[in-house]
Length: 219
Length: 174
Image (cartoon, rainbow over all chains, first blue to last red; front, top):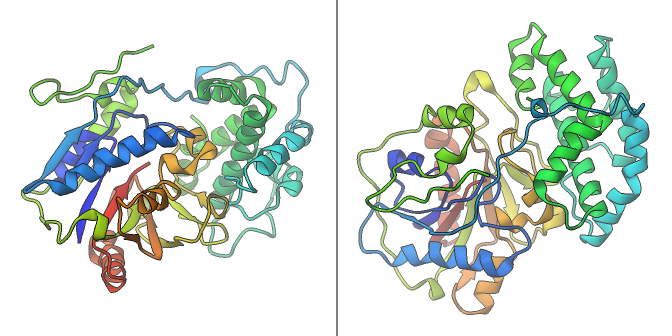
């Protein structure tokens, strides 16, 4: 079989030497350039397929483009103001539900929520579970699969909560820039504050797996 | 805003890494990639317009309800794969990629930005691609040890692709 593909870190392709790769100047998560831009995505695909016609390899070419990738904002870059405003994650989540449902309705049912397999209408229970974990209570959820450790399951729950918030925000502010959504989540929401506390709790744990998973929760 | 430096054939050797944070840049430069001295080369047997194409990604995607990828630090990462039927729509696919180091908002908005499931049928309609495989395949990226892919899951996916008569594979990262 003949292969061609996209690579985001050109230096890695230089070392691995796959047969044909197009190095694209986009930030992670955006290999085909831009969401909701089919015309541009086709341009990227065409450039990738053009490499199939080469007679010898390895072929590693770059796509010239003037798109500037943004730097992904992390929670530690901002001060969370939710506590000062008296917000709590469970009520906040409920207040966003209509926006989240608006998002899924306007996207044909599509949602990034689903890693934990817990329906979003029961996310208040997930918040209570995570708050209990932060407070070092004996806590768990019956939905946790037998083959998933507690920290792995927490990770899936956090992925779902983040996706819920981000999709709700994108429904609220359809024209909002991606960085503004990150800024909002980490600096203005009680869920952002809870996620930071959760990551700290996991970093403080004695279990190496829990410590490692904290890196993927918040930093 | 930092300026993106694009590489040229003669110019900069570190284009995209220059726009990342210092931690990310060092982390990626130190990443334990497999280094090869040569490249397996399979020329096109026929034009793309007559070929069957499959999509394979390292975006950690899977069908909703399928087992999420897991983070196995002690083992260097999850080297298993998931089958994503071509008939699956964007609403059927979710991502359990374990890296926090990238922006998920693009994928939330439009999965085609990393997994072009809607673009490929458009290219078939336009006659640029002959046909598409019935199944696509997904792996986890950001693996620190790819031995499991080299020895087990990679050959298994290749076997399945060949059994389906695939001529060309498009590889996408996230």
